[in-house]
Amino acid sequence: MGRTPCCDKDGVKKGAWSTEEDQILFDYINKHGHGSWRTLPKNAGLLRCGKSCRLRWTNYLRPDIKRGPFTSDEEATIVKLQGTLGNKWAAIASQMPGRTDNEIKNFWNTHLKKRLSTPLPLALPNINIKIEGDSSSPLSTTTRHMAQWESTRVEADARLSFSRPGQQQQQQHKFDQDYYLKLWNSDIGKSFRDINKVQKDGRGGGGGCESSTSQASSLTKLGPGSVDDDTLATTTTTTTKTCSAAAAIVKRSDSSKAIHHQHEVEGGLCYYYEGIEEETKPCRLDVMMMMMSSSDSITSTTNEFTNYSDTALKQLLDIPGGSGMDFLEDESDDFINFLDLRCV
DNA sequence: AAACTGTTCAACCGCGTGACC
DNA sequence: AGGTCACGCGGTTGAACAGTT
Image: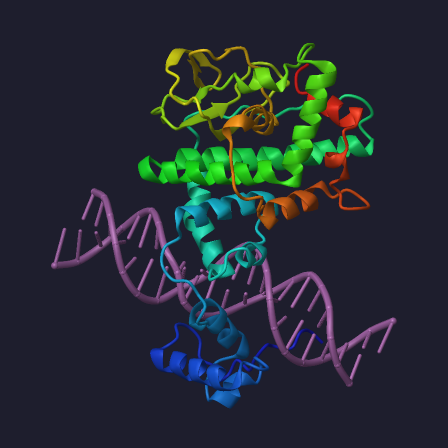
């Protein structure tokens, strides 16, 4: 039997729309609404199929469409959302008012994908967190999902920050600062802070994994690029098989520190700053952990948190039952163990 | 100036899905 | 329950334009 065609192929115009056709469609929808797309062309007097009319309206004629080039913030949003949601262009577009899925998709395919596919100046070591214990336990699944999410996000952030020079990069830094600030002020951030507090109070920083205080004071400048006075880009570089790369931007109050020395590490140069411990055994959670310990230099007047980050994380965690984020509110040893596993 | 190559993006195509009968 | 319809989505295409030789 097969599927019925969306429209009669005979007598239906295809290809680029003329201004007259645009005007007819625009006037008709403004007057009557689109109603049934299938019957719209006939009612409006257009020799187009309904599908073509719908596409023309949603992608071009709709009055709320934002025209013009994508801003750096929009670019960053696309990269972040694509990293978490994949090629769900409609879902991404829903987070970006005025932008169509088609526009975002095109922009991704012609600009961002190409840009992100080029090798980074600094190779990002593979993230490889060793999960101890019963791998079939729900927590292990959770942590693996979390690791995947963080891996994707961190790499996207790192690549984006590398991909834009000069002023644009500074804007990206600002975006990242805002992003992590929001993350820090979210419930998730609170949970991490709580856990960190427990870890500090109850365990200290010894053993195979430094305290977060130690980690926070191990900020290093990523790559051989220019040093931003206000910002320290932190990277985790390691030759061990257990720790991972991260590139994050953390605002510090003592950003006036001069570079103490630098040395080569796997994938690039590390800069060490005056008064900053150089020992570091970072991992993907370093971003959060460093923010924890730098909280005295992080201030904010808003607790607003972007929905997509939270939602995307929940989706990716895909934990049966409840909100799926309960473990983050739980100061259980299991989760602390997860933090501990970073350094083996 | 012409030919060629690469890039962009509007539009098309086919498929999945939910609503309806 | 199964067929049809309508719509939305993601991948792909191709015309137009820009840049290079």
